[in-house]
Length: 575
Ligand SMILES: [Zn+2]
Image (tube, rainbow, N blue to C red):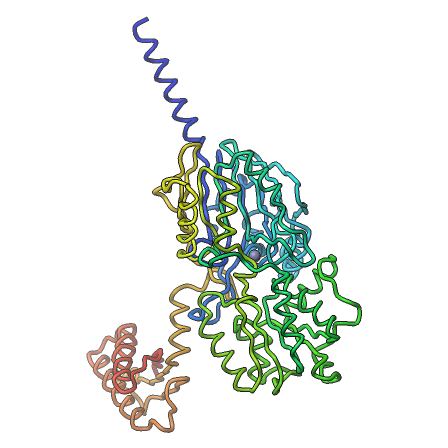
């Protein structure tokens, strides 16, 4: 009897330990935390991985030449066969926009699930990337349930600024998780059903282990405006405006586009839609029956001149001050058919995404200088418009009564504000987790905690040419080029004597106007000759060293004279 129980205990402990390890659920946010956009979250249980959303983010003012920022998915490399599928909450680009960049890496037949409209938007976007594989995507509707490995997912319709938005009730072996997607509570939406509180309460009663809730509006007091109220505010503008209305918004705010079209019809205005993404979304949503437009409402931008100003609405992109968008082109007098004129009313019907404040301000000023009216209503704010504010967020927590709480989707300050709300709703501090991208959140039945390990989650930048090849260095160069220009020095060196032949050529762009800087140039040439002759005088020449010398010495010389630091490019030609 002596030793065998010990052995048995040993084996027992060993298997206990093994099971315990596998009992953890890991949640890994690859984007969307500490930022607005780029939403993507992994749920990993016993090595099986469920992906929620694959979003992108628009670049900030400080990232010249960058089109999008997408999540870093290197954690998934080598784990492709363990990926069960992707579930999309709704059709906004910050939830679906990265699909074309990821699909080949993650496997062509990766099962995807999305609402009908979301599916339509994903498929249309995929067409913009010729040569990419067809997607294996199934549409789901409110109340549908799907099983993927250890997860069962139930789709729960919630109000937002676009139709087919689903919160997700994710049943795991450890308990139920409720992921709200983007949401707001709306008792009186337009062309949509009001929030079904009865159903949400039923879900809450089933027991929620973890609530992951949208934080975008967590710093805003009170309740978001109902779509009905927004409609009334917009109608006030339509009622009193005599000239043209130029309404700019996100192409993704389908509800807002519907409101502007409906009001235009009511006030006998024709609508010209302009901007690639907006035209695309009008086409998709109209074909799927989500956007209601009368047959003769839409006209082409160049036809606007055929009608009196009081009968025209222009619905366009560019409320974020995007350089290539329609509103910017109109304001800068670069649009083919449209110019601003006195009496026009420009409506900015979306809020400013953090990072774009300065550009939008300049755009607004530019528009106002052209004697037009500008309305930038808070009430038409995308955040206020599409996302729950403090009162609603509190209500969601009270309905779900989760054991654990994790704020998602928002700048860090928004996550913190949301965590405060949860504390006030009696969720103990230790059960609230404020995570960042790349964190690994370990969930058991009794505990939620951050692992010490992290996964890569840095920005991957897309610049139209390629994905991920735009690093910090390239970005820094672009910034310098944009701000201080470049300065090329071409010197011809005689191989035999090691001396500079003639006078070095100087080419500069975006630095100083050369004709007015003759003295500076003459001095620079002299310095270049001295540097080269000194370096080549000793016989063996280290060209790399010489180029560096020119870069540094001429760089600091130019700075001392002009307070600018252009990129200095020495070109040395041996003859
Ligand atoms: Zn959204």
